[in-house]
Image 1 (cartoon, rainbow, N blue to C red):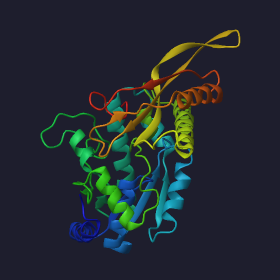
Image 2 (cartoon, helix red, strand yellow; image 1 turned 90 degrees about the horizontal axis):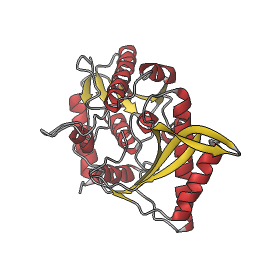
Image 3 (cartoon, helix red, strand yellow; image 1 turned 180 degrees about the vertical axis):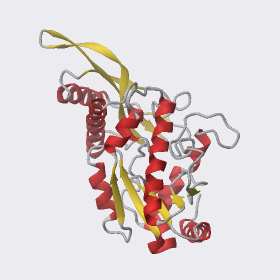
Amino acid sequence: MVDPAAFRTEAVQRIRAAVPGRAIVAASGGVDRSVAALLAHEALGERARTVFVDTGLLRAGEAERVRSLFGPTPVALHVVDAASRFLETLDGVSDPEEKRRRIGTTFIRLFEEEADRFGADRLVQGTIAPDWIESGGALRDTIKTHHNVGGIPSDSRLTLVEPLRDLYKDEVREVARFLGIPGSERQPFPGPGLAVRVGGPVTAERIELARVANRIVEEEVDRAVAEGTLPRPWQYFAVLLPGRTVGVTGDNRVYGEAVSVRLVESTDAMTAAAVAAPTALLRRIAERTTRELHGKVTRVLYDVTDKPPATIEWE
């Protein structure tokens, strides 16, 4: 297990050595990037510009939460609204790997533009060990391309600085707790956002359906945890499936979307076990999802597959 105090000292020294000039720091609401951002600020001070990209692919209320997260810290957050740009680059794309590659490229191009304005040539990001391992590192096959590893274009002008590269998620959380980052136990959220929780083509409407479905799962799981009927899972979310399904509204036949709910337990994200969720919880999620997305989602399923053979995220 990592020694948080020793890691902090070493990481700050490594960042200073790797950044002779200025750097752009990729920020998000996730624990990995939050830790990297605070370490970069400590190492570089005003030579670092922390950038949060609102991709339009985030969970409900996420942009506001990120602003509040960094508000009490010495990090000055620079927010870039790029929702239309990401939707445009994903237009007509259904293949999961292509989604991740396009998202990674779009992120890098945005960071390059910000770096040009700031006079920077380095990009500090919160890559952790599972990211590069699953992206085909260490002589492994690619399980899935993480947007911040395999999704980076080969012609990028920015040199990457990855202070968390050798840590696993549980170790990053230890460092986050040591640094006093709130929400260090918050569940992971994929860097490509809801684009990889929308099976098939990505549209603004389908992203919004996934956003609502994810909010419902999070709220109902949080309720079950508070009631003591469920230990808090490692990760819990909803996926909009690529196929449509027949349903009934009143006396009418409708043809709507299907949602799959996933709750898993893990320690480092390398393996995971599907949670045996209480039936009452699943019924509440199904009832709310079909009611709040009336006529748009007509079926809710539950994913009971472990990792392996599945990955945690569907895409």
